[in-house]
Length: 149
Length: 149
DNA sequence: TGGTAATCGACAACGATTGTTGATTCCTCG
DNA sequence: CGAGGAATCAACAATCGTTGTCGATTACCA
Image (cartoon, rainbow over all chains, first blue to last red; front, side, top):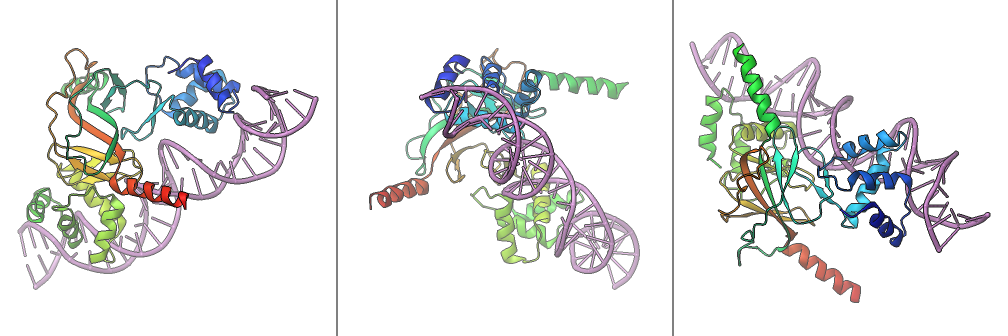
């Protein structure tokens, strides 16, 4: 994710205006290692700007995604998640709570073997590891203890 | 995907009734290499049973998924796709039209490296190759020709 | 400073999926 | 075969995440 200053320039270049709302979202995303949903960004933004609208949040996130400064992940957790990290990386997804974590590992062998592409022109490769995160595992154990009691 | 006969037995074991509607869906899924959406299954089923309801289709598909006889894929194409192939395999997804194709390749190196799991207990690994399918590529070329004309 | 993009609030609409109802069908077990 | 109860139907409403609409207001920036 570029810095707020860089994003400001990019928006100006594109003829998009740099409003306080957008700057706020730039700041929230910059260096954010989580993969917030639109609602999460909205909640965080409202802490600073109580009158910001959900619409504006979506608008700005979509603008960023169109410019390639942000990736949209649909990992089957119900809502889209916005990934400020544009570098090549993969994801750990919790099947229980939907949490998403980055996995910075390169899998050079993961390619479609010659002759198996079935006519597809491949543009991107995603690896998703699904499982249960630490917190949800702890919850499970707590539940078991309750069951014993 | 098990045969309709096997599925019939499984449903009985679970105390679920084997209605004509369900048998119809069993048949449609068996040996189906596509990844139909619920709507697609609905359309195919209605060709045989004009009065079957979308509700019943979802119901049966969800029952099958709960029993592990079917996988539900959420590949960011808007709607869930039902995968009758329960064996380990990966997918090619068309970013343009949402088409999904199987890719039967094993990637033994795709594992979370020791110490990188961040507390996750990994249960499943998916590799998704995104790109443009042959049909959509052809469409693009046709569009270009039109643009020239 | 002015033109125009962006935002706001409040609400409606979308598509995919699930829930509701009460009446009807029909599977399954004895 | 017959009874009991699940499953289905039709028709509709509701959910969730997201996007569109409106007119009025704000505020960026050449």
